[in-house]
Length: 472
Length: 105
Image 1 (cartoon, rainbow over the protein chains, first blue to last red):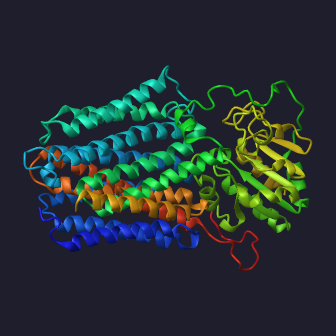
Image 2 (tube, rainbow over the protein chains, first blue to last red):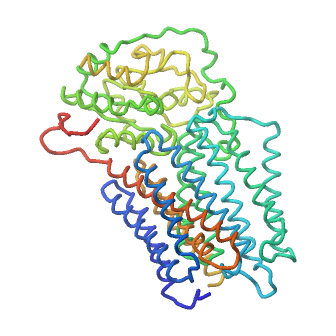
Image 3 (cartoon, rainbow over the protein chains, first blue to last red):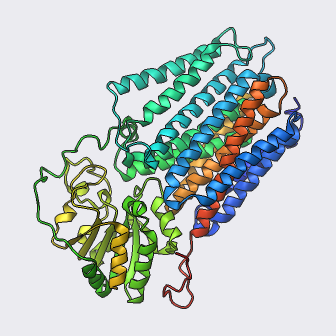
């Protein structure tokens, strides 16, 4: 093979890698983000073109066909997908990267000559064996984990955690077995092309462990899971980059890997939970002892759409807190309309978004952007939390745990320590909720329901906001 | 390239990733995931190498399969990111914001 002969090839891959860095850098502000995305596309085009130019292509028509089929499918999906379905889509896309990594690793195992990793003794190089086994393992975990995450997010599977007995022992044992088999494969005497069943065992066990790792994790922890799988898909690409000695793949893998890891960390911090406890799963399965035995009936006030319209029209400032319920009800457009009407009345309207609102990082921001809410009216938790004390109305739509004061006061609560919005400081609280029965994903009662200044607006979020608009 | 140079690139790229990703505004975390997903499809390079090589027909078809999967991600990932980013708009400073933004739906 001609690799390493032409230094320009290495330079081209390096440029592709740098384009990807610039692409992520562009996301530091919405103003530069689209240019960043273009850099990403340029980087990908350079990587693909370089690969095609520098290899003897024995099957160009098939390759062009494969790109056309995949590209067409991807493009149509991207155009048609609803913004509320973005978490599922991202999970589905992760599963494809994972599976592609497995296929590439298997192809490298079957035809190591093409990848320049065949040693003089007819065996695959030992380092390359470790890299391909790890690449295949991470890819397989990404694939099966993402399939489960997709099924849970898309509602094909209940979001409730599925807890196998002794699952920690099973999972840990399987992971250790995968590592042991990888080591065995690396030092095996017979490791020619396609030889040695230990590689296949690694792949099979990795598919299995991906399923086992994600089924015990509940729906509310999906932001962490999706971020984590994002990270894995990067590490899988990096592992294959090591096999191919390709800088574009290594740089990209490292970028994506750290990106997913940082997002997971941000999500965990926003829930005040450790990464380990999220991964161990089971959250929301037990009916948390929080709320201090307040399960008995407590008095609460029911408000009407007219009340809400009247009070908000008279208010000086309204802070709207959207949550996953808004996404489910597709209420973002009517919510924007309500905000516009209030602004016409001279009300100062702001949107407040908690880092874990929704099912993936930034989920609510995208939905509000879709509804043409300007991004400079949307605020992060730490930027707006001080303003509730001056706010006339806190309008909570489809959020629950992120406004629960038990996180600040009740040490026995499962969400204790999680940073929450200080809605209780607002003069009036409107809380849109389907019914009084259901609770947040943490399964904790919320004192906000029973506060003097709270009015519960029971019903479908979208219908309720539409009624408020009518009353305005 | 020897293993140590590759490892050096990898480790340094992890640090670059760390600093670049922390600078991403939280409002764009969903597009960040979509675009990282698209660029992690650079695994298509490996898929192309596998499908281009003669020798093992099975490896070639696996490679082609990987090319299809990665292409779904590349085109889908960049297109959906573009679609999302196009929605992020600043407050229009024009003639008061009285709902006359002409936004559809």
